[in-house]
Image 1 (cartoon, chains in turn blue, red):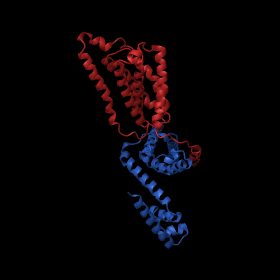
Image 2 (spheres, chains in turn blue, cyan; image 1 turned 90 degrees about the vertical axis):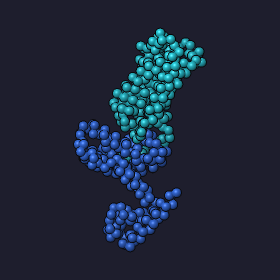
Image 3 (cartoon, one colour; image 1 turned 180 degrees about the vertical axis):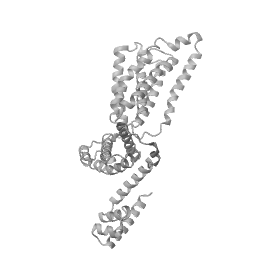
Image 4 (cartoon, one colour; image 1 turned 180 degrees about the horizontal axis):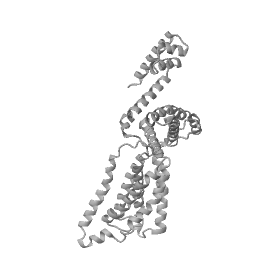
Length: 168
Length: 213
């Protein structure tokens, strides 16, 4: 985001791209609309993030800003389509904060994985995040099982070292 | 349109964003509107002929301290509400400070004036037109703020509209001082504040309609 604010088109484009799946998940969980509706909302939100990026304060958390926009767009969408959302469901909605935290965590993980060599990152992603077994991951990547195990092990070790180094 | 294509077309041209973009843009909007209000005073009401003399008197500065402190607080509130994550606004109680200060000043003034003159002091010469003049002068400034808001992302539209109305009313009252010859604190406290409140109420009414995005 900061890169985009300073005028880096590549950073900005990477940010908007990473937001699309995040927002899709956010709206899918909350609107029960058709896929077209959800995609409309996602696009509207991305346009707003782009045109109104000047309202982001660099000292404050990005996700709070993002989901405030996403929420506004959703309320606006309901108002326009005049659909009522039964109040009973509200309690079951995952709270704004938990979603923002999860999104934060996901972005952190992606950032950390980006620091690893591609093979290690892919191995960790499939076995530890997507939940495949070592055998499935090996078949998917066309590698041996021991290769996957070694990659996961080395990758995690590098990440632990990295995170501990960053911590003051 | 596919989302990927949309992102591509949006990121064709990414301009850098200034660090204090909101404040600068708000100040720009107020400045443009303020020029309009000053022109309105000069053309319709006339600048008070003794302005040079009044600049050396304490009453003009009493009026300016009141209106400018309100205006700056309203400016800060508007800048907050221009963001989607506007956060807490509890500090808005600070708005009471200039009001209380002026009220105490007014009380001292009344105490040193014979009771028979109180009514004349309170109503002055222009109590019937003062609130309406302040309200009219706030219109150009409110327009300037609406322009500024076109790039903002308020999520509490009514509050944002009220804050913009308050800011435009307070800045308008500040400008109105270059015309208005009234000198008593109770006059300012009542009739200036009434004009500012009217502007705030209209802002709150119009906010949800005009600030949608």
